[in-house]
Image (cartoon, rainbow, N blue to C red; front, side, top):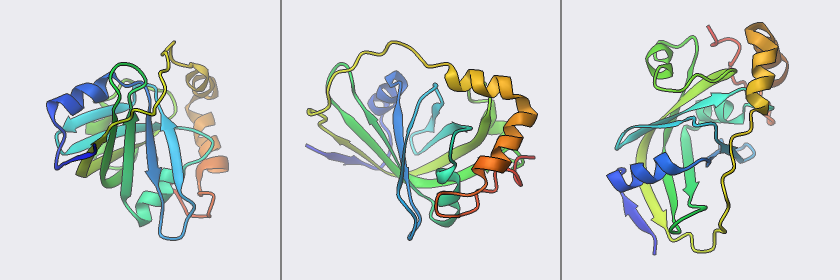
Length: 183
């Protein structure tokens, strides 16, 4: 059932482009495991061995804290319509903040999103597919605009204040550097 690949195929890339949601898993050696759903058309394939996703401001910032200490990241896509499939991407992630030199070239690859906080640039080590036959069908209705509206209403200064109050450390007290590296 499961198949392993050293890189993304065109078929994998097509599948990714059709998905509306993906899930990201990270952890340090001693931290809580973080598993986050992501959406908002924030994922791109750079090439067959490299992907990236734009992280927007949220209630926590676990991923940013984790990848500084353990850059392992797993990204999972599931087919909720059409043929069943689960696609997992295993790789090494680097958090790119607004103040980092790579930010300027990477941010242009994404649709603008208010509250953009980091980009995670992931070098792939393994691509795995599995059947996904137990995943139920769900119908996509549309994007929720609540987070975009919240970030837009906060404005740039309000977002930075929020980062300082809510996003500077992980649940386990690991620094995220979102304020210090935001440029």
